[in-house]
Length: 386
Ligand code: GLT
Ligand code: MN
Ligand code: MN
Image (tube, rainbow, N blue to C red):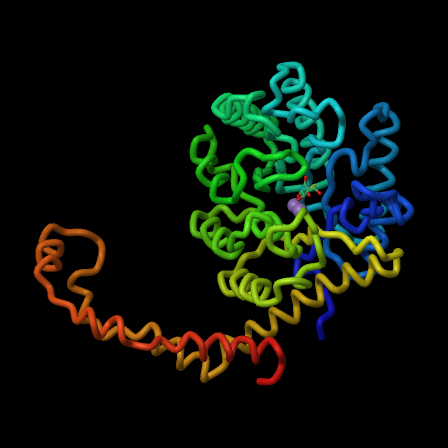
């Protein structure tokens, strides 16, 4: 019943199920699987697609001949399993050359190298069939603002994205960009720290229509923010090009836990939102298994992400069909039409009439809204007692 199917568009990055459990305090606990092995693992658990950074597949120092061989083997694994590559991205954070950022680095050589690396990675992504290209600027930030003027950083970031949009147009690629915000880690502070900041920045680009966002649950939660509200703002602007699903305790380091494993109610309202509005992009699980797990545990992790999503999707249908919940919602949103004469859009007549209108402010303040009952009903749907 909760079996993942291709139409659910569940995807994982090579780096997610391929995570070997290294952390700042400890060595790897799992063997590094090859990209081909990861494709087979994902096929076994029922995923639809696999996403990648350039260097998840092709090592940074591979020769052109090595690259071609690796890509050919990977394509064979995709053909054998039926998995697709909906999204690709560039690793602009792992190599020491990017220690001061990539597009925003102070050194113009680093910035030029970052553009070169990204153009080559875009070529690779397009060759594999990707239609969405993610930009996560993990190193685009500072530890000290003495080192970089944030206005220079903003200009460099804008110049780089404009350059790359023009490159995509020039090549005739069918590709859109999705910018992923994160407040910090690995930098002390990362520029454009939230999805909202990205949405503002996009409007300053030469081709804003090519660029949207890739919000990640954990990244807004690290900053103590409401993820759903950021997703909704992106959706409202037609900018939800991709989404990274995972989970995270508020205020902690970047935990990248299994989807739905920490904030179940937030996960529920997120799934309900995506399903209600008809989001039809990838549901990408950008997360990894606990460091305690072997590869059976990694499969448990991956299956758990998809299964929880599908359970929450079913709960959303149940919530929408619950007559008591719907009756409460109807009450909350009741409208006798008497305010329509003042409702936006603005006219000077409406403004004048509204300034003269009288309101029973005391009664408005005294009315109970029933949100306690509504939330408890939600909890009971989630706990499976309704
Ligand atoms: C990295 C990061 C993720 C980004 C990936 C894309 S890589 O693991 O933590 O949130 O989405 O570069
Ligand atoms: Mn993350
Ligand atoms: Mn992510």
